[in-house]
Figure 1 (tube, rainbow, N blue to C red):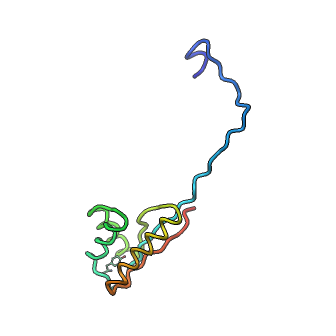
Figure 2: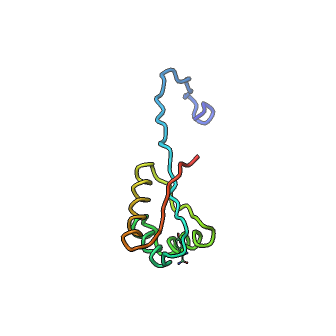
Figure 3: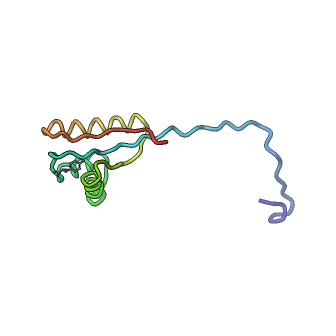
Length: 106
Ligand code: TYC
């Protein structure tokens, strides 16, 4: 607040070094299209692993279906890699080639 806004106050320059905490880099989880996994199965996996609701899941699935890939969400590296593996494994367990990959956000 300036001394004009609030007479009697002034702002001193900071002398003490303030520790800045860098934000951790974020990683994208990307859904890749394939020709075999049923659309409804993709939607179920998106809801279960990424906590998307029905319409968010449907939109992500359709974007991957039409464009080849779709970014689902961003997380810290560990979380992104764990979720991508969990989701890919769910497909594998059901005999589908469904694939999720991760990529560092620039
Ligand atoms: N292309 C699949 C089909 O036609 C559906 C699908 C959509 C699969 C998105 C994977 O990431 C995907 N049954």
